[in-house]
Length: 339
Ligand SMILES: [Ca+2]
Image (cartoon, rainbow, N blue to C red; front, side, top):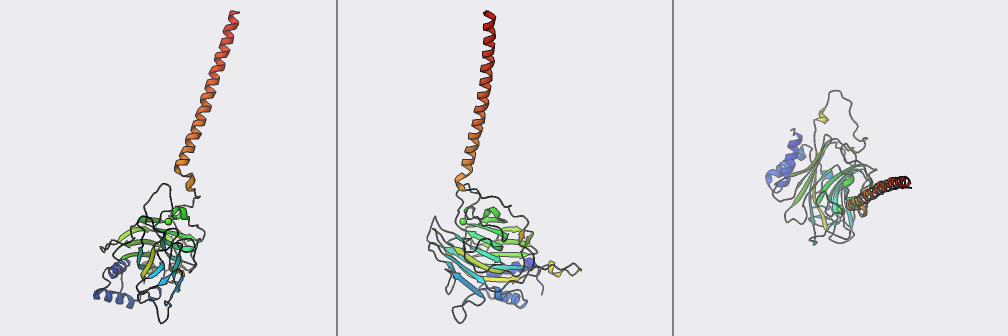
C-alpha cells in the first residue's frame, strides 16, 4: 500500500484526534504493518519495561517517569531535565507527533519552556531550555517566558526553530529569535484538554503544526523549505525552569517514516549521502551581534537626538560667529571712513 506524504500526515492527525476509536487503532496498525510507524523512536504508555528503564530512551536531570506522563521538570525553580531516544534516526523523511502538557501554578509569571531536538549530540544538560548550547542539528523551542524585555515582536508562549551547524549560540536574552528559521505564537499552557504538536521533515521541508485548542483542529505554525538535516542524529526533549517554573510533560511520541517522491528517484541521478550533509537552513535570520537590552531602542534613539543637537549647535555657532566677524569688519571700515 502506498500513501502520499499528505496522506500519511492526515493519517497521523486522525490517529491523534481519534486515538481511542477502534477505527484509528486499525489505521495505526496498518501504518505499522507497512513499516511507517517506527516503534524504536516512539514512546507510549506504559513507558517502563521490567525495571525502571524506558526501553530505547535515556532520561537525565530532573526528569521523572510517572505512569501517565514523563515530567522533564516539576513546577519548581532551577530545574533542567531531558529525555533522549537512544537510537540514531536513519530515515531521511520523517514525521513526529507528540502529546505534551505544560502546566503550573503561576498565573502571570511562568517559565522557561521546553524544546524538541534532532541533534548529533545526545543527553547533555545545559542552558538552552535544558540542553547544551552550540548544538548541531534542529531545535524547536516552546518558549513560555519572554526574556526579551525591550520592544516585543511577538507574544509568548512562542514556538520557533533553529537549525545549527554547531556554531550558533542560542541567545537566551533574545529568546533565540536572533537565529530562528521561523516561529509563531501558541497559547498551549494550562489547558484542560490534551495538547499536541507535530513536526514533519520531508523533501528538505520543515513544517511545525500544533493542536492545542481541544477542537481537533491542527494549525500550521510555520513551513520552511530548503532545510538540510543529515541522518544519524537523535530525537530528544528537554525543559528548564529558572526563577519561574512550570511542569513540562511529554505524554506520547509517535514517529513515522515517510516515503517521499525524492526517495523514488531512479532516473540515474547520483544518490545523495544524507548522513554526511551539514545542517543548514537557507532562510534563517542572519547572524547578528547581540545588543544588550540596557541600550535598547529608546536609548539608541536618545543618543541620536543628542548627536543631532550637538551638530545643530556647532552649525548655529559657526554661522553666528561668521556674521559677528563680518559685522565687526564692516563697523571697522565705516569707523575708518569717519576718522
Ligand atoms: Ca524565553
